[in-house]
Length: 267
Image 1: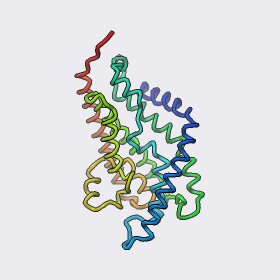
Image 2: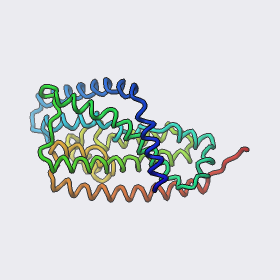
Image 3: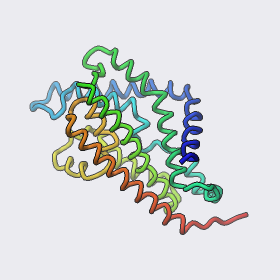
Image 4: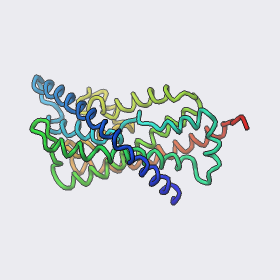
């Protein structure tokens, strides 16, 4: 575990150096945040029936989505790992005295944390100072805030476990593009990143609840906004832990299976 912690810490410090790129990303994420809020504001003002989320809950959902984009986006990738697989330099990785799954998991985790740390606090602080209806509200109580933090961190671990399948699939396809598009598009849609899950049709929500993606974004953001109550949130955290264990075990088995068929040619 000490080796994985060292890798995570080193990659985290390295990622925190890219402050200029993070500042450039802030403007983009504010643009998307305002645009989504204005679209949903028009939708709510013309809706005939009441919606399963209030506009205030939805605004919190959208700002958190922009603040923690690096925690929830499956297209967030490490090109270096793809290069290692497709060029055959994976042989160097296999010489390390650590497990490949844990080593890559630590690198990907640190990469997402570094990117989020540079962006989340400026976006949240600025969004809290905006006038209504654009203001990011505070969580309804302290319990919701604590459960949100736990759910967000577990969601991050789940999304890294899901993203590991993208890298594992490249051992077979040798093409990162297809894997990123397939898992990224489906994963983000079912996570509620494109359309919040409560606003989806009821039949589609049954499919979403059977998959692991909603536990990465939809669940923690609705806990913060108060759309999911404290008791339901505590139960949901248990489900998150179950998915995390299942995805990690399946990912490690899949990686071990893929490595058995790896052939590296050359001197």
